[in-house]
Image (tube, rainbow, N blue to C red; front, side, top):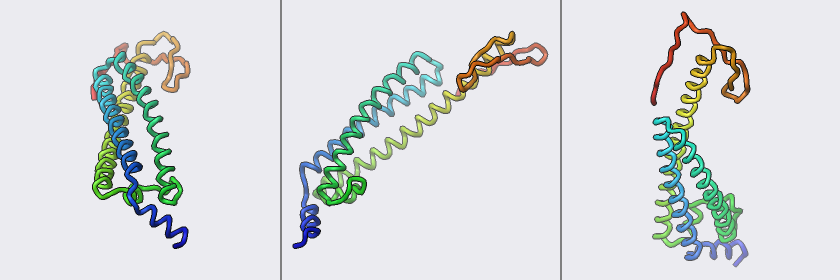
Length: 183
């Protein structure tokens, strides 16, 4: 038997420890993604309610969760390296399909289901986060406009890039127009 055949033969045998570690890791990733989704949904509600303190508090909690996700990514890298070694391929070439060769059928099916769930959660997380960012941009644009309208005496303010500049603007017929919009 050639070395290549030996690697292929060895890699086709189920590796229960690796399979368990992969499933546990997927569970941890799903749990983290669920927490983050819950936080960004709550943050979106706070943005809509214009609750600045809640938005800032939730941003801090999100930052902490991102730190925990970094640890999960480090664990993922170690699992990929271990899997790649077992499969005889570089870690960047490890796929779930290839990993399934190291699992019995039931574990491979669970891994596929958990991976699909994780992808769905991450997609929804990205969608909600993008919506929150857009809402924040709208709110900041409104505040910039409002500050420009209120600072008619040439007082400097900050533009959207954080640069100080005169924000005095002329008013039409001496009136002040303000809209209260919610998304």
